[in-house]
Length: 404
Image 1: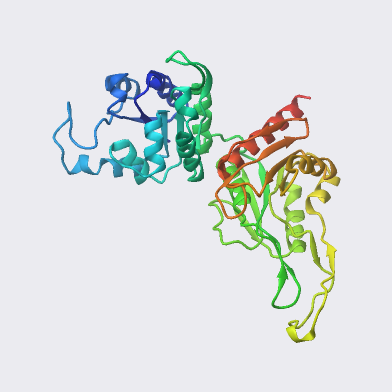
Image 2: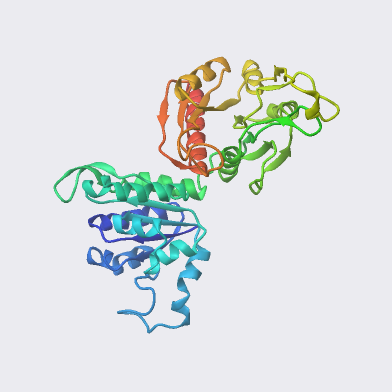
């Protein structure tokens, strides 16, 4: 694994040296990029000695480097294609603004635009700067773009003030990096069944009942589990998404088909994650021919579909069951009811009326509720990051169950 570590101009820049060491202990090769202001706090020699790699300090030729040439002119492209993640720690208010708005005026900001690797930023600054509406808007914009933001800790700051703004602990940043890299291989040898997307229930050959689910959350869970080493079976209703690499993909359309697929694969699974938005009702009668407008007023009678997760909960065994609760009001309250009634181990509640937490977006804002009484509120983050946090809770519960 290769990581590019961007260091920006902040008193916390010296802490990045320890982060280099921690990443190397995980077997990760680190390439350091320093902004011009970062060099006012720490010398490039420090990071070169720690990383064993040339430290990039200029976009082109500069002081202490050979004159600009074709190699240096496209070096950002070379680095962009070889890294598995871009980490910026500490990240100043200035760099957050540039990243959020696509400004590429040095090597680090140009690398950000040129790379398709996941990005982790760990802000550090004065408390007033961190709380400024512009900075918070830039942070929100980055999260919407899929950037993993490791929020600063609160405490006594170098400026003498107290409050949030201190660079997060190296352990916290390291954990975020390992998550986006998928380096946590704690599901090797496990089988995970994930449901995703909507199901469709026919009214006639033309029309059907369905919902707005895009499948993104379920696909993110499948990807996260696969990255962590699991054998993943993704049972998906109709979506426009491409299945993550390395998963077994089962395409279904109706609730009955999804139930059959889940029941076929669940016996061999240690974890089942029900992220699909399964249709709760289906037409009581399916018309063989298209219903024509000219027939006048008519009513559609509905009947409940089979509750797939509840069925698995009633046949409890070693499996860990995870459900999702997409709500429009009292999300946490309704999710707790779902946790109890369906005998789940974990339920993930989200209010789909919130911006960035509804349908057809790559982010989510959720609350994770567990059988042992934990309630974990997560800020807006990418659905892949949410998926990893959910799996973290699954593993915590399993460890506790094993210890007991």
